[in-house]
Every structure is written in structure tokens, then in C-alpha cells.
Image (cartoon, helix red, strand yellow):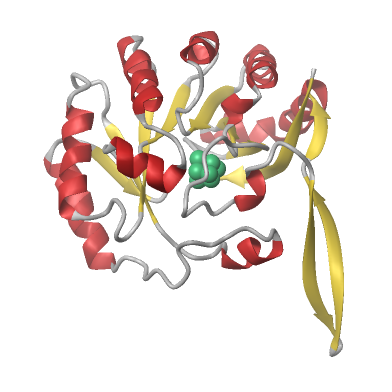
Length: 265
Ligand code: SF4
């Protein structure tokens, strides 16, 4: 079984507990305006041309983003890192793109990871068939589950898809006692305003106390050069970032409702 991987990050500390290896599967059905990995969206290899300057001379460095890998090749890399998982309570996180867009590959990766005794996390937009979530439920120790907007029309506008299936899947996971951490990208002018934060809290409270932890991911513009290199439209150009004080106010609102909150992953 092979799938397309766009990156493997060692010593990741923001994608679940402990020291982890994050395996980024390529391809995503969403088109979030704030996506900081636009190179992850297509389920195919792409060419990345970076400008480099050496001794006053400019030259192009070309890199292929996206590599076809077998489950065995990925697991071989994870095994080399596993000493760090044992020492830190870490493991492997499958991220994207949207890892559920390659469901068979993801399932095989999770099975092989569990056979090796690794703690497994899946970082998902939630936009996938519910049957795929059923398939991986028993193989996944932790779901890092994104909530981007509670309003369906706004969600469709800013991500390209409805949030109905996402919320259905979140309900399915909570009803089946999955361990879930909610991840919320905080995007100024889109979902970080008072009303929408209130709507998100109300939504999370509707899951009967099954959701206990929230990670807030404030928008940054670190990806602006990638948009240029991959010739993708950057619709949030010149968007100001949130002030620390604004982020703290949002954090406190979730904390006041009893959620454990972390800023960043
Ligand atoms: S779900 Fe994630 S990877 Fe997909 S477009 Fe949105 S931010 Fe990018």
C-alpha cells in the first residue's frame, strides 16, 4: 500500500503529547483562506522553486513536494524515532492536508503504528465520510479535530465546504468516547469576534462534557511566500494578526467554561 506524503517532521511538539513524528499526507478537499500549507492541498506532486542568493548571485533551487511512499517506508522512519516517543510519552501524528483523503493508506499506517506500540494521533478537518472515522476509531488514540466556523454559510465561504458533515463526525466521535482535542484557527475578521467565539463555546458545550481541551491557533502570515511560489491566490494578504491581549481574552472565555486551553498546538 502506497500513498502520497508531503513531509515528515521529526521532534514535533505541537501535534499531540510528548515528542512526536508528524507525517503529512498530501491532499485536502478544503481551501481555507488562511491555510499555512497551500502546498498540501493537491493530491499530486508539485514543483517548488525557491530563490536563493549565494555570494551575490541569485539562483533557483527546485524541489519536488509530494512523494509516493509505502507504509513500510513510513514505519521504518517512525521506528528510528520511537526511542523519543517512549521517553516523552509521544508518538506519531498523521496530519495533512487532510489525512482522511487517503483513507486506505491512513488506515494501514495506523494499523502498522499500533502494531509497533506507538501512540497515534490524527489531525483532521473532520471533512470525510463518517465510515472512515468508524474505520480508524479503534486505531487512533487522539483526534486533533478542527472547528473553523459554526455558521454553515460562513464555513462554506471561507473553506469551500459546508460544516454539516464535520459536525456530524464530531458528534459521532464524542458519542463513541474518542479522545478529542479541538483546534480552532483564530482568524481576525472571520471567526475570532465575540459572537462567533460565543457560538463555538455553545457548540462545544453541546457535546455533554465529552470535549475538555481546546487549542487556539492564532493566524500568522508565515506562508505568504508559499502562496507566491505555488501560484495560489492569497486572499488574506495584509490581514493584521491578533494582539496578545485579544488572544488572552478569547482563552479566558473558554477557560471560564471549564475547558483546558492551550495557545498553539
Ligand atoms: S483543512 Fe487544513 S490543510 Fe486543508 S485547506 Fe484548510 S488549513 Fe489547509
